[in-house]
Image 1 (spheres, each protein chain N blue to C red):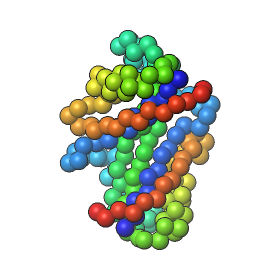
Image 2 (cartoon, each protein chain N blue to C red; image 1 turned 135 degrees about the vertical axis):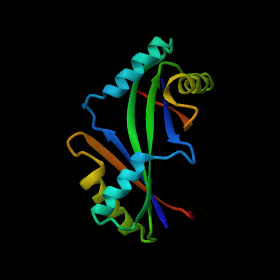
Image 3 (tube, chains in turn brown, blue; image 1 turned 180 degrees about the vertical axis):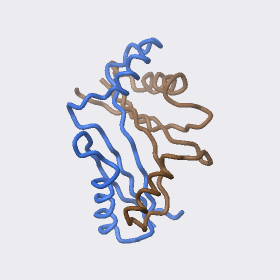
Length: 84
Length: 84
């Protein structure tokens, strides 16, 4: 059993409205040391396989077909062993 | 300058509808090796300070006051040095 951890970010240059709102809200709460925030998403995927190379290929395909929007997103994939 | 990386997860036992929908969509696309998916959020926070201990306390306060919902969320904080 493997688990893939996919982190999906906005590409550099793409506006991050959620990040901007969080920065604004933190300033309203007097966290004035905050200069910028960025939000990204992590999808953990449990896979019934032990073939790490094949898992990497398949998860990359999942990103391209469903999880990430190639116009605005970058993503990274990490594969690890799990026992549940 | 420091950057905090905050990962906000749903607590164990809390239903993850987005994860369930992703699993369903992956099965519809014939990724049948997928047994489960979980979605979490990462907020990166740039901080104008070099005091790591103080940064950790402040970011923990940000989580409690704004970023995480203590009823349903767990979170972890990592602090790193940055140069931009």
